[in-house]
Length: 218
Image 1 (tube, rainbow, N blue to C red):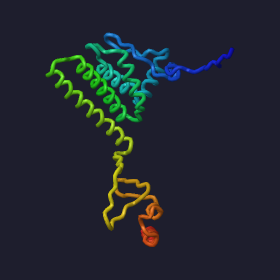
Image 2 (image 1 turned 90 degrees about the vertical axis):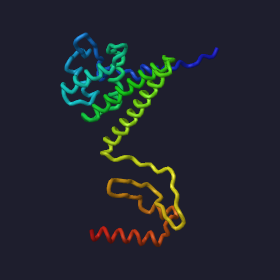
Image 3 (image 1 turned 90 degrees about the horizontal axis):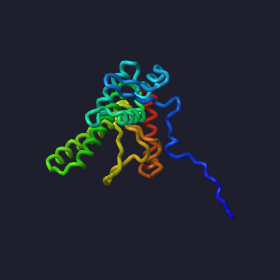
Image 4 (image 1 turned 45 degrees about the vertical axis):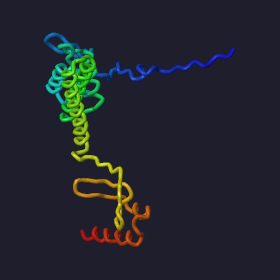
């Protein structure tokens, strides 16, 4: 009889288990207050502050109150929705107060978009479908704008530019290689165009000599 070796693998959920000491504590909602569920209240606040990217207690509780209001399901704040939203903010990993506020807005807009999508799927009324479709479209566009805003903020306000198609007319030339574009200058990888055969070696040499002369007399 042949027996197969037992495979000891960790299930996907357990592999990503975040219930250890560094996991973000969950929030308990009461009628008039918010409680952080953690054995050490100060440590719980610190972990949540790190997750939300805020610097002090006032900012932490302010963002938590806003997330609680945005987590409403059936006219009542929902702990499961709130935990999901906090987890999403943590995965965005905000580094400063601007990123923290933008991340909270992003997850709130996402939650609103999903509520609109759910209502759209449940209604057969044509006017309601049209209204919900417009709302969902606006929310989706807002979310995309927020993603772009976060990317630009993290890149010091510079917008990434990707060139996918390049056309060169007769007599024209193009730079072949890695090109980095900044606000005031464009820097290309040296010798890239010559190696690709786009610029004759003689002209490339003259160009390099001219750049060296300019650098020496700058």
